[in-house]
Amino acid sequence: MKKLADLLQLGDPRLYETCAPVLPAERPLVAGWVADLHHVMQEIRARYHFGRAIAAPQLGIMKRLIYLNIDRPVVFINPELSGLSTELFELWDDCMSFPHLLVKVRRHTHLTIDYLDENWQPQTWHMTGDLSELLQHEYDHLNGVLCTMRAIDDKSFKWRP
Image (cartoon, rainbow, N blue to C red; front, side):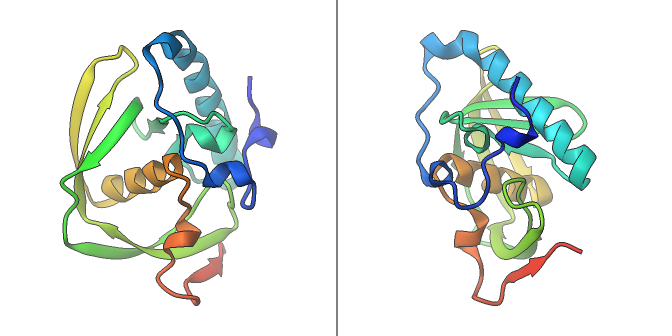
């Protein structure tokens, strides 16, 4: 089982890689990956008091997989974003891979995400507000993009209080 020590930190070159899709032949591996993501997210919550979702590449699993757990767990396999709103909003974004840093970014106010669930069933979810922002952040991880790369300007960084 992966632990907090396995979480990739800012500067690790793997965080800047584009992830490969989860293949049908890898379906039996998904439950183990999800268990690892859940465990590490629980450790982050206990230590840093934040964390609603985590992307597989943050644990060095270079696959297109996101784990969300707010009120219930949701697994996003091979997600695709569409219907990104033209309207944007600004926020101070955080990331488990650099838990003491906040980055001011702009995100779309709403989107649609198509994905396979843990049963390999196609799903569609229309998201707005903070969920939209959260999934944009995690989806970026699948493409090797960190919120530091989306900073509004060179003054859009601050330490978490």
